[in-house]
Amino acid sequence: MKNIVVDFSNLDDMSGFGEIARNYAPRLAKAAKEMQDLHFVFILPEKHRGSFGAHIDYISREHLKKEAGQYKGAIHLWHATHQQFRYRLRGKGTIQLLTVHDLNYRYEKHGIHLLRHQIEMPWLIRRSDAVTVISEYVKEDVRQHIPFLNKEPQVIYNGISDVENMPRRKPAFVTSVNERFFLCIGQVREKKNIHTVVPMMDYFPEHKLFICGANHWAYADQVRSLIAPECKDRILLTGKITDEEKNWLYAHAEALLFPSRLEGFGIPVLEAMRFGTKVFSSRYSCLPEVCANHATYWDSYEPQDMADTVKKGLEGWSRNCEAALSAQEYSRSFNYDRYTRQYVSLYKSLLGL
Image (tube, rainbow, N blue to C red; front, top):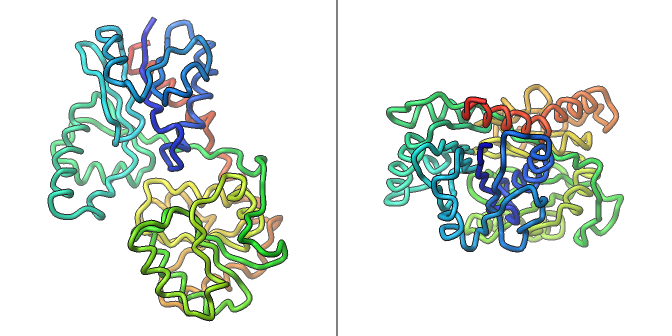
């Protein structure tokens, strides 16, 4: 019997890390019931101890070092599911698997903070026995910018939940079910490039724009400053929303606007496709890889050029048109059942089973 520790400490976080944990943990626990040669230990918040069955052992995030120490010498594989993990048990014979979601620090950090990441990330990768990444884009970034890389990263794409079949609820900021609107989803941070779509809205006087996501960064104030007084009721920074609200918005939006410059994967573009919602995307980072030919891309960020691209892309579009159905089917190829199978296969391979 091989013991595998998997880090789900971000289970409750409203972030990409949290989304992955909430989908992967139950599927891995279910798969574990059928395995005779693997036993799993989950790291997660204390309140979730026992949530995935008695056949799983648990380490509390709040007492991680103390409880993990009890397994010293008995862990065969440790999977850090993201590069921001707090603690990893090291021991003779323990295989270290690290999942890298991005190297965004190269573009976002400055000064001493950048230097710290430039030292820390290569060290974490080189000290790991195996590395997975969430897109070919991240794989190439790792290849180019991690000096003395001593292993080939393996791409395992994130999954997408079956959001189209999940509960929906109209947000309070939507005044009418008949109003026409565009949607931006994600943290309102500089890398998301959201400021580019605000002036574009001058060319869509009949539409609203809902910008949904945490917006406590200074960049959000920059976005707010671009909203003309007469557009205050038409362009809204809504803050965080629930999953039910997000699903309702996907199902009713005329389009998802996703001008981001930095994405390791880009979950919202694939979620929107599940609802037959038209996707407009930048050509930056992993987005052309993930969206393939199922999005319309901006080649200019001049407001009128962006608006022209959106107007042309929406011509003849409906949620049941051939292109929408094709995008929906494509999005279904990214699913957590496949994700789980790939990781279980990798665990067994690394353990020589």
